[in-house]
Image 1 (cartoon, rainbow, N blue to C red):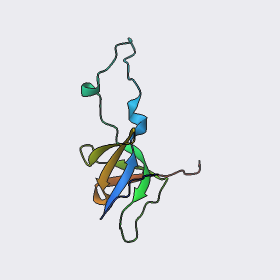
Image 2: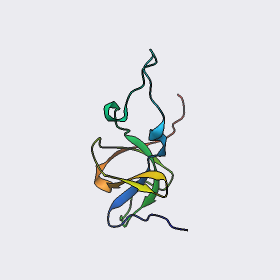
Image 3: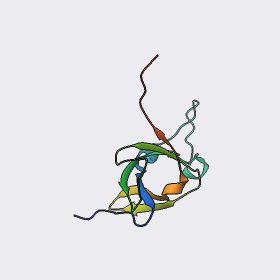
Image 4: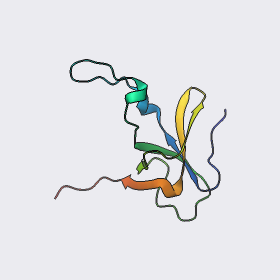
Length: 95
């Protein structure tokens, strides 16, 4: 079995949720070239980062045009520098 392991200060994100066909409310299919890029993804692996504020399984928000898209064994991934992560999605209690 093979797996991707990010090097240096990179983070590997799961981009498999991006493949859903998008339609307008009128039923017009939006082509890939016109779609807005996904900016949230699940962390799959973390490279050599001292005291990271994220962990595997977290959902993070990242810069719009950052990282390198990868196709590996039929799945889509994004390798992104740790510095390009903007936020971590966390569950909070209702007040």
